[in-house]
Image 1 (tube, one colour):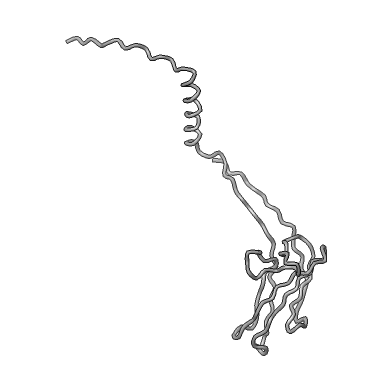
Image 2: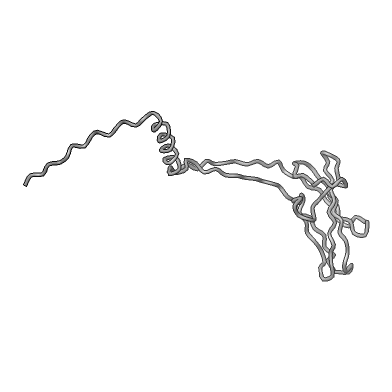
Length: 150
């Protein structure tokens, strides 16, 4: 048995408008499906110093600890007041503190303490008298990024 197939006309070449619309559409679809070439990282590094005070024998009961950090580079003082309640003998704090924290180190003007590299001195006052103190250096920090290719 013999079959006869109809002859189909050749498809018309795409018009200039068709190429203008279809070309970018195909490129968009191909780029969306293509795997990422490299991982992009967002990175941050901040140095902090932990300071604290402790009533070793618990003789004071409740007290207010006022931490004062002095920047030798700028000459500014930054303050943080912490209440030490009954049953607590001490408190630790971090410098600098994130300004989003309700208890952050700030200058008398309200300016938050920056994490600037440099030399600092600190003290903690209880009842207006220096109880403890010290010094520290905040290091300069930097970030290295490694590009991971797939």
